[in-house]
Amino acid sequence: MGIFTDMLDRLSDSSDDLAIATAALSIYTAASDGTITLDEFLEVGLSVGAINTKQKISDGARQKIKEISQNHSITWDEVKGYLDKVSKKSLLEMENGIKEIILASDGTDEAERKVIEDFNAYVDGR
Image (cartoon, rainbow, N blue to C red; front, side, top):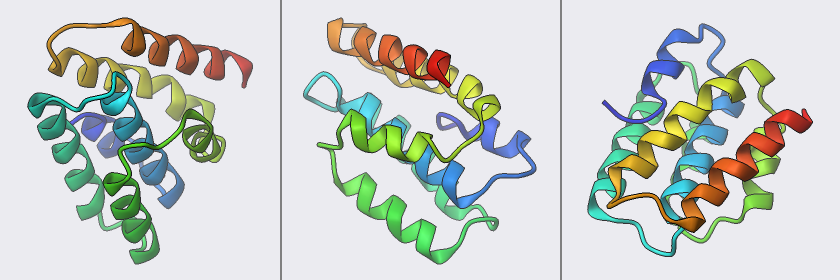
């Protein structure tokens, strides 16, 4: 099962904004250490695929997710722009998804720890 998939299934108000933010955070986390490992690639692929097949998102959101998925150099500021559009409750549930991506790689490095720190600081600031 892909990252964040359980969260998206549980939220009855799954929206375009939540789906886009989830895809952006997934890609950013996987690419944070400069490379996306095969395991991270598969984990993100499962997640983005699950998001894209949800009936509750628009074709425009699917297109945006496709663009984000192809941009492995997405910045934290871009990700925050997407995160700004989702509820704090949804943000709190996203941390587990971040950890799943990081654990899919060959261990946690400094860049990946920074993603968690930045994300937690962002959530605390909301």
